[in-house]
Picture 1: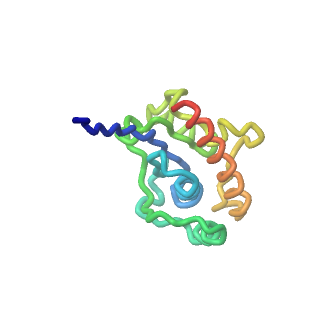
Picture 2: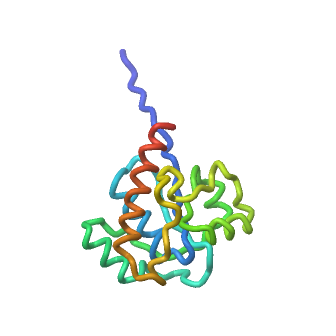
Picture 3: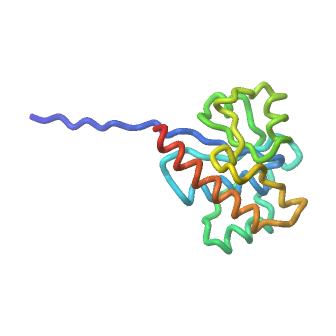
Length: 155
C-alpha cells in the first residue's frame, strides 16, 4: 500500500514598508499579490500618523484603473514580531530605512530597498506629496516583478 505524503513549503514572508502605509506600501502589497500567490505579503508603516486608515483614495483609484485587486487595508505600524517573522522587509526611501534601523530593525540581509533588484530606480517617492501616483505604481510594479524573479531564484 502506498502512503500519500504531502509536503508543504513554507512561503517566504515579505513586508513592504513606507511612512504611513496608506500609499506606497499598500500599493506594493496589492501589486505583489496580483503578480504571485507564492509569498505571504503585507504592508506596514514606520510612523504612527495614519494607523487604522485605509489606502489613500487617489492611490486606490490608480490601482483600480490598472485592474489591480485591492486588499482590505488598515494602516499598521511595523512591530518587532513582524520583523522577526519576515524573510524580507522592503522599504521605499532612505527615511524609511533610517526609521527601521532606529527601531533596531537593521539586518542588511533582511531590510532592503524595494528597488534592490531594479538598479535604474533609486527611490520610490511619496505620491501623497508629489501627486504622481501613476509613476509610483509604475515603479512599484517594476520593482515587484524584479523582487519576485530574484526571490524565486533563491527558493
